[in-house]
Image (cartoon, rainbow, N blue to C red; front, side, top):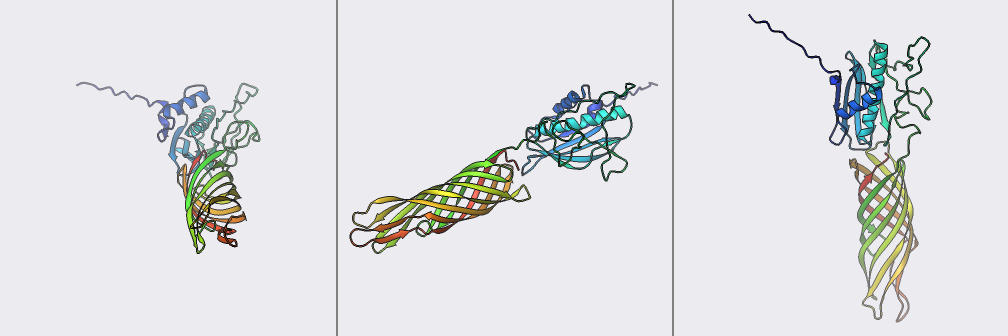
Length: 358
């Protein structure tokens, strides 16, 4: 009879570290290296970690659900960021802090309170320095307070150095970021618009627009070029064919509580010219008349991709300088066409955004 000796190979300590992320994000090895770099030693599996990153349709681009627990007890934290690498840094900070406390305490589960935190674009989260040792050689751990609503678990509170009040716990009001305070990111946008215009030219004309601008969290500033397609006005004295080109400077308020849906309210000044060519009139020639107007619009934009929005807008135009085309020779002056002082536009938009701070 032969005896069999079964040898159980112990599970490596890092086996309790689960990291799932989409392509383009740092992998599990990068997270483990970041944790060990903050610990200053190998990660011994003091806590179990489940971290899952998923892309979002609206900014911030990435959403992390993180659970840190011991002996099967814990709670989840949700973090968001424009950069997946920033989520790796934040996860490493939280895991290293929890592992250090668990190693020092030797008992008691460590849980992370359920809350949502947005991480700044270029966040580099600094690990707090260990507190000075108390008399007798025992290290002094930072204070840990229980999170409301968690019974029997100890909530982990991470404390950061910098302009934040010393000892202030991380919450949705104190996002993880580098010392020096959260930077106000600046984004950009490129937009194409098209639709119908009534009032500036004879009849209903087509409007084609191209705009580019800067984005802040609640506002934007843009430059826009506009082309109004040619239209013809027929009169007994002759006909006039006209088209227009304008440029505008616009400032907008970005309204809306949901990041995916935005309601821009815009206003600004538009200047350009209307080119008219008389036909069927003896001695007629083409001329360009000046155009100056105040524009205001209200619209809606919906995110269909983290960087792409589509929408519509209604725009009103109040003319300051509007053209009038007349035939003066021979005989008395006869008006062939005069632009209305009030005109309107119905526009449909497609917009590409870069580093949108919302």
